[in-house]
Structures are given as structure tokens and as C-alpha cells.
Amino acid sequence: MRRRVDNRGGLTCSVQNTASPPYRFPAATQTSNPRKNIPMAIQWFPGHMHLTKKAISERIKEIDVVIELLDARLPGSSANPMLAELTGGKPALKVLNKQDLADPARTPAWLDHYNSQPATRAIELDASATTPARRLIDACHALAPTRGSMVKPMRVLICGIPNVGKSTLINTLTGKRAAKTGDEAGITKLEQRIVLADGFYLWDTPGMLWPRIIVAKSGYNLAASGAIGRNAFNEEEVALELLDYLIQHYPAALQARYKVELPPGITDEQLLEAIGRKRGAVLGKGRINLQKAAEIVIHEFRASTLGRITLETPQEFAGWLAAGQLLDAERQVKKDKIETARLVKFKKIPRPDTP
Ligand code: G4P
Image (cartoon, rainbow, N blue to C red; front, top):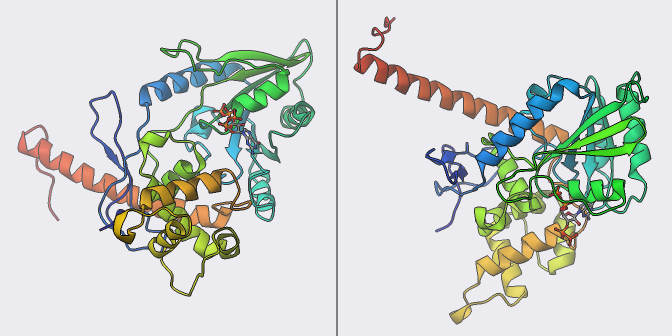
């Protein structure tokens, strides 16, 4: 029996340190696999997120440009869906980081996608860039041309999901190893100001995820990328989702790395077993150690030993988002019905007229 979700199931985020019930992500209807209703737990700390949210909304009034660091391998999934609302539509610079790990044939489509949005610019970057400051400064000036003098300094906020490379970028920008914002016990340091150049200030914020990932595929892609702590998800589920995508879009990379056959119709489970067998991840009596095989696949995706891979195109992500929003709206209608029935039962509201 294996994991996964049917059309009404989905990933579950069981929130730690709160009384909230686990949140069930909507089903990943966008993939071809049949799903079992076995939820996957992704855990993170919404308390941290709320503090970051608060810090951003308090700071935003005096910000000219918001830089969002995205993972170039999953630009749509690593983009904070709440950001535009949080930042009140301030000019945005999308930095597709880790582009050295992403598929170079796909990154331009994502840059075009963001560059075609109002008050938005996009650039690609990676940790090997030794002078990223000039490109960032130029892009910010293009977005806020009246700022950047001593009288009217450019005030920039930088945000992104955990592990997207924010500290690495800031260390490169400043030429020194800065403490991670939000790293301290109790999260005392919610933001830090960095002087990038004369009249150019950068405010760093802690890595942030959002409480409800309505695009189920995004949950898997975020887990595969390393944005979610390893104890917070099921590696086998994530590896299977990853393989499902790679079979369809990067079969040559799989064959080259794992020296496996990919006959038409091969399933992700069959492939995971084949990889486990090839790599000696076997238990007694010839059974495959699927956990070990899953760890190998995830590790090799992250390290790009599988090749440069991007897990979503703008069109795919738009489709997943639309499906996720639809399921979410259906879920809300159901919730509203239950709530109305409860209020009627306790005579808090009159029974609605039935047509
Ligand atoms: P964060 O502050 O956003 O949480 O991320 P951080 O800078 O700590 O980076 C997370 C991991 O991503 C680090 O690897 C870092 O080296 C790597 N990284 C950051 N930017 C890039 C990039 O553009 N390309 C590539 N290939 N990797 C990048 P790590 O293994 O967790 O740590 P370390 O071994 O580098 O210390």
C-alpha cells in the first residue's frame, strides 16, 4: 500500500505548537497518478511566520522596492502568494536564485513571465555571482527611479522562503558572514538593515513559508527543494512525486544518472524500486528499501547530480494554481455550509429560506 492522495485527499500540514487541527492540502489533481487518501505531514511554525508577516507589514510603508528571492527550480511554488497583498503592490524585483541548478531552457520563460507583470522586474542569479550588488541596485533603480540619493535613499526589503539562498546572497553583497535573520532563539531579531551602497538600504527578513499551500504540487516541490525541514515530510511521497514529473519531462536525465530502462507506462513506484535496486538499497529477501531510495533521489535532485532541472513552467503552474483555487473554493463552500448548519442548530441565525 502506498501513500498519496485521492481526488479529495491531499497533503496535510500539521501545525506544531498550536491548537489548530492539521490543515489538509487539496489533492494534487494536476498529476497523472491515482492517489490514496494517506495524508502527508508538512510541519512548520506559523508563529514564526506571523511575526515575519507583522514585521513586513510594519516596515512596508517606508519601502520602495520588495525583492523576492525565488528558487529558479520552482519559481511559482517558491513565490509567496500573500506577498502582493502584504506589500500593498510595491514595485517588485523577482530574483530567480540558484539558477545554476535550474534548467537553462526554462529560466527565460519564467523571467519573461515576471517581466510582463506590472511594476515587476526579474533577474536570475546564483551563489557564484561575485558582484550581484550592481545588478540588484540597477534593477531596483529601474523600478524606483526617483530613489537612491542621500536625500531620498533607496529602501529595499528582501524576503524569500527558507533555504532559498538569502543569507548566501546577503553575505556576498556585504562581503562578510552575517547572522541569519530570525536565527536567534525566540526569534528576537526579526529584521536587519544592511547598507549596500551610499543611499541604498536593504532590510532582511526571516525565511518564510505560508500556512496554506493550496497548490498541492507546490508542497511536494518545496519539500523536494529543501525549503521544508526533513522531519516535516515523508521522503517517499516526495520522491515519488518528483519521479512522476521527471519521467514525463526529464527521462534522459533519469536514464543517464540511474542507468534504468524507462519503458512506456512505467510508474514512479516501479522506477523508485528500480533505482533502489541499482543503488543496493535492499532489505532482506530482496525487498527494496524505499526510504533509502527516496533519500537518494531527493539528494541527487538537490545537488543537481541529476542535471539542471526545473520542476514547473509558468503554464503548468498557472494550471495547478487554477485547480488548487477551485478545490479551495469548494472546500470553503462546504465549510460555510457546515457553519451555517451549526448556527441554525444553536438558533444563532434563522433557518435560511430554501428555494
Ligand atoms: P537561506 O538564508 O535562504 O535560508 O539560505 P542559505 O543562504 O543558507 O542557502 C541555503 C543553501 O543553498 C546553502 O547550501 C547555500 O550554499 C545554497 N545556495 C545558496 N544560493 C545558491 C545558489 O545560487 N546556487 C547553489 N547551487 N546553491 C546555493 P547548504 O548546503 O545548506 O549550506 P553550505 O554547504 O553552503 O554551507
